[in-house]
Length: 317
Image 1 (cartoon, rainbow, N blue to C red):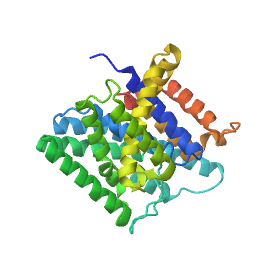
Image 2 (cartoon, rainbow, N blue to C red):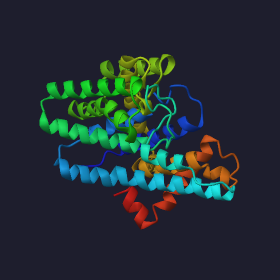
Image 3 (cartoon, helix red, strand yellow):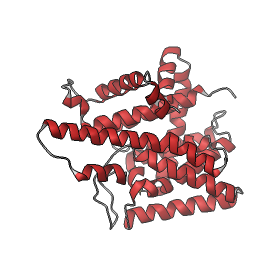
Image 4 (tube, one colour):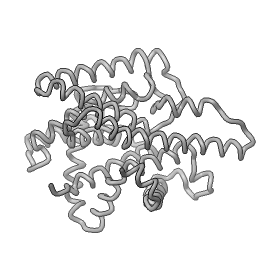
């Protein structure tokens, strides 16, 4: 089957949106869809596979990059501490092992733990994919699958919001499994095919409303207005895809964004390293906190790291 270049471009748009969202205050305009986009497209490509083989594959594609990046971050923190004449902090190891992505958890237990940051996504997607594969094979009929998926997501969101910030991003992963299911349905209903205005225009309106009047954060299972946030995330993802179809037709720009999407995992990990270690600031880069500087750094670093075979095997298996 021919590769859909527009999907790669959409992932490229998504990872750029993640970087900009971390560097610039954009309200809910980007957070309303940039993380759901990756869960939705992961679900779009779902195929039922042997559970053991899938666990091994996803561990290699998601958990190994997490461990490597977390180790690099801890090593970076340690080197900066040595430079400043400070000692090693146990909290760094706690951050790497716990995998917490947000400082704003509202749960009663463990709401304030050391943060690892943006790579919570890798842990969360691992749990999300594993759960969906197990449930789908146990009950592939869409009616019961939907009930289990949405019930699990609701339970995980409530647990994370009110009870406990569980380690290893388990609850954000299970809380986001409904987005994965939406992506699965997106493929089943062929909603990425021809434009259906009666479906997409209302979803675009929902995204606009969610961006203006609501707020969400998948990292801490926070949805200010859940129905609006879900519809808005779908609308934002579809809109990003339609725009990406246009970008894909521009040879140079389309190839750049497609490459960015194909390397989005490595770019995310490079971005996280700079966010945590403040690498650009440490090496004296001019304007290290500007979004365009961060984007350029992440793309350049990813391109250079891709030239190293062991790195390429880890981040693009």
